[in-house]
Length: 259
Image (tube, rainbow, N blue to C red; front, side):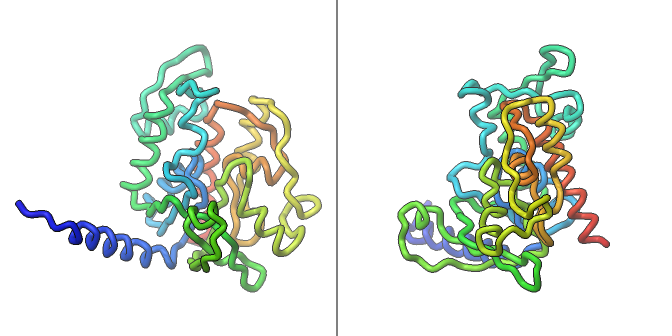
């Protein structure tokens, strides 16, 4: 069986080109492949919404990989257990309302579900800027993460969508870029990000779901980006709120698209 070196390159270039062309126009672009972004991607794609997920790192999964302080176990609570059941993620009861799971299995299962549901995932892509038209966010300006890290003067490309979901975690980077460009225009008391508050796991888990909503026309926030935008507490290596946040934002965006 013959294998041509350049045929391997050709196969990669042509199929990636097709993938890249396909994401020029999406219904939803999710920025950040952590647990909330992955859950949202799976739910949206399964509902027939054309979904693209971008992550600036080589591997997606956000902070879930490392569990707590690099001990790769995570905790979820009763309210989020049904999501693990739906995705056949194994867990065990540690105590009442405390369930532990292997973080590697969790990330792998969430990723596989998103991809097999139909979401397009592009890694090593950074968001450089935003596209805003008529006071509504309409797309993103993207570049290779390596260009960003190397500070090379390489012009970016643009992709468009009906909705953007900031799932970038503590940084809330899309929200930050919007405020940097247009000033304090968010749906917060003073129009600016309220900032993440100190650790309080129980309250933070409640708030990450409460704060999951539209922050500016066309721009939704979920996961820790929601708490960073609307002033919620930090909660550490418990991930039930993250999963529920991803599911909530997917439901809300689907409702808007179908309205």
